[in-house]
Amino acid sequence: NAGVTQTPKFQVLKTGQSMTLQCAQDMNHEYMSWYRQDPGMGLRLIHYSVGAGITDQGEVPNGYNVSRSTTEDFPLRLLSAAPSQTSVYFCASSSGPHTATEAFFGQGTRLTVV
Amino acid sequence: SQQGEEDPQALSIQEGENATMNCSYKTSINNLQWYRQNSGRGLVHLILIRSNEREKHSGRLRVTLDTSKKSSSLLITASRAADTASYFCVNSGGSNYKLTFGKGTLLTVNP
Image (cartoon, rainbow over all chains, first blue to last red; front, side):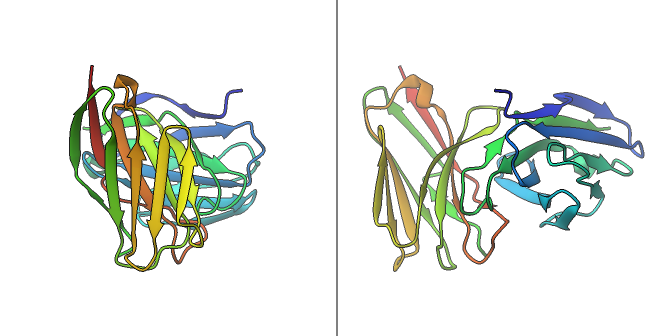
């Protein structure tokens, strides 16, 4: 089973460029989230979705957009990359709320903005 | 803040020894989960303990929860080099969707 797949694994962007981080899961999970992890820190929630067509902001949403057109996919868009967005990004999915059920994480996308 | 505080921040032990990590919160604890992160990789769910539970076991893992002290502990028995990782406790008090991560405990198990 593939689980949660994130692409790309590594990316370097120039300030001002835009890009989309892809996340796909094959477990038919309703709940999906995007987190960022900065050095020596825990994960912080960017955006989350509780089902196709439903998204909401997390703790640090500025500079990011999401959409959920299908159950399987939850892409994260960086509108105009800034050095402060240099981080490792993780996508997670679960069958119920992350707070009450096991969340499955992708392997991460390491993004550097120069 | 809902963010948990893990203690210690770093722990180094020899293979075969037990490792104990603690977690405390300022807010109430609802469901509390522990996750492991190997260096540079995604997180793996270890165990979930509900607010009405006091202790839970899974293989070599033992988790305790004290809601009156707003604290939890994770014990790994007979540690192995493969247990080297960062361990995060994650509180879900007050939210259905948001996992609140602490900074984690970095465990190093020396062969």
